[in-house]
Length: 333
Image (cartoon, rainbow, N blue to C red):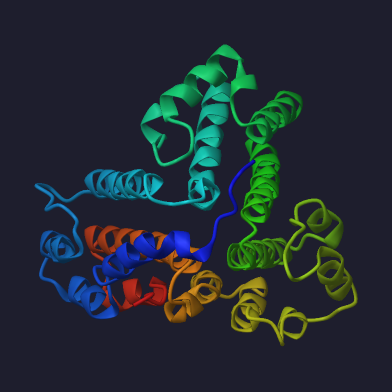
């Protein structure tokens, strides 16, 4: 019989995470990176956050550095986290990313292994071997089923977008299952917020393209706080997105989303969605110990990696600091 995990089992890891939080990229450091004299100077600021100094700064070296940082984080926490399912929630998107890369490569008859990342539950080489041999039965069952379904759709339609839609739906299904298996209401709340944000993003894009709710109905994900039926009924009834989400944590994102749906900029909308998701875990800053601080740190680290990517790729593209600043999400610290 599996031993029940208690908050006290996280005492050591919570102490470790609190120390790591002090090294997270803060808003002041982001501003320093934006105003630095060159991309190289901007990248050097990251050494204060534990990142290695890059010999050359390019889109490729930045991407490799960030991938290695995520892999290192997962490897370190895997030895300490009492419930592996918590870590799996943050590894899962990388499994599905790798599957998308491999299935698209398979359909196009090319190899794009350079796009794979080793931050998932399954090493990329193992995933490559499973897909190319057709022996997916040794993979986690839900992932194997997702691969089979996506392959069938791709074979029938030759439409990579439809294959991605299958994998996205399966991803959120498995994400919910993992969160529920932990018994953590904090993690379940975080996943539900992710689903709500994903559905709002989907609704905005569909409305922006002038598509109807019949198309939307087939691509929304169940399991969020905003029921799919309520969202569809509201849109069909002529309700504005800002009305439907007025009393929810996504109210601000819905306001900018409504403008984006009418042809406005998507930049602010995407930022507001990501900020709303990170806001869900901020209350962990007031939790003494338990799984919540660990979950919040993992979410904050993902936000940091995204911020670094936005800043350095923007600097490499010679974008003005104000343009890059508009794309930056709120910092966790």
